[in-house]
Length: 287
Image 1 (cartoon, rainbow, N blue to C red):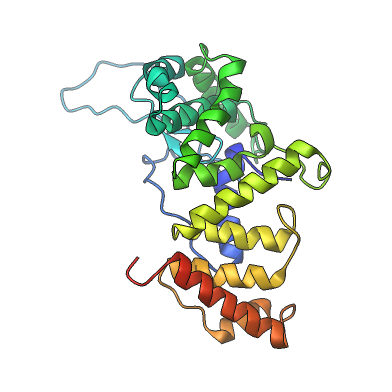
Image 2 (image 1 turned 120 degrees about the vertical axis):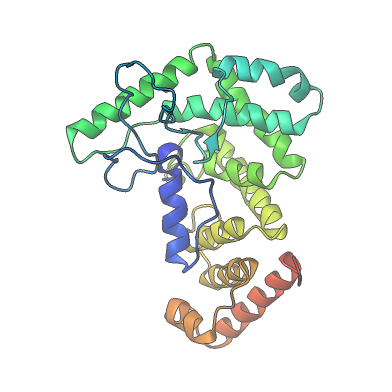
């Protein structure tokens, strides 16, 4: 199953941890409230603000919890609701402004993420907080139509085709047609097959821009065998390249400990060469 929405951040941490790599830098979150969501759920949910009280001159209001898109990225609406945010950028996006196109995608993805199933919670109070946050986001998305939610994928493709690395990765994170999907169960679906080819191409293009997260996703893809046929040699090669993108050199001892059970002899040597080649091609010295 391809994971999206509120599980995206957890997926990022898990797959990079499995490869011995560090996840991509993300903007710092506001200081959390005392209670946090339990388990592996990616988004942090906070209690609603208390009833208003007379403000002191030095009083600073606590910030709202951040908004997240289905890709797990924080989205800043600059104080607007989603429909207004999209409307301000719509004309520019439709006439070739790929930055505006990506901004529209991001805003609409907040609403798409809000429709994803909630994760499991350890205690009922945490679910209450999550549901309250969901109602807040639902209000921000009130003016957004189902057509706009689906059209976000077209704006995402425009940004990806224009070279936006984040957009290229997001296309993969979204899943086929912008919906969660069981890639194994739908392996013969022509739309899923087309999405796989496009997603693989975008990840390779982002990897060629020395994006260590894209390279890690490629390593994971060859390990799982859902996006492409499983190939431990390619998993190892892309793991080497992903580390190089972070200016980290994996030793032969580390590689044998991680891949030695499946990649041996001539295959190990070939994977080592492939990883070195990918590192030089995608992340030339001084990148």
